[in-house]
Length: 251
Ligand code: MF3
Ligand code: CO
Image (tube, rainbow, N blue to C red):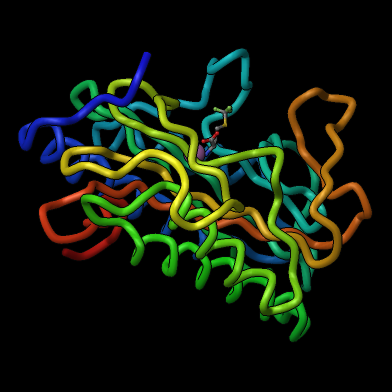
């Protein structure tokens, strides 16, 4: 399809939808506690989306059965909410996307359940830091490879591994648009960013190796070695001077 440049009016709709996506993720993060079943997080997502006038975009996407992805510990992405109970010390990645007035935004956070290990904390901080470092690279004229390489370096210099089999992506009228935004690569390579591009940057970071394995449910992605994994994602717009995060709570 090629890269789609958005108008200011389209970006304004994504700003509004993105704020709601951020709000719902924040609400979900606060709801997380030991003993809860993950289906409860899906219920909250459905309720809150309805209350705020956005439509969850994952439900039914290639047959995905829920409105939010809930990925626990060694689950990298696309965990399906169900009857599993969260336990103290787990880390939980919450990924949510929604449509508002025809425009999609997509974001994710990883949160701890109660007290978590220092290693899990470090993994989460490295993943969030990598996302923010990638966003800082985004401005007109920068290359996609600059973003990818920055994320990879940030992660690997902290002793973690970045998942290579899943990428960030363009987002807008569609949940997944061109270009792909890998979380590893070479600076100075790839397409140049332009004002009006809207991207979902989403590093997935593993405690040990970068290889993944698909679960028998054909959705949930696990680390191949069973190590912990964290995931943070923002939808951003390329502006004249840099990048605006569209899936932030306050702006
Ligand atoms: N943030 C994820 C992505 O960009 C979520 C998609 S889950 C799916 O791919 F269910 F919609 F596939
Ligand atoms: Co995404």
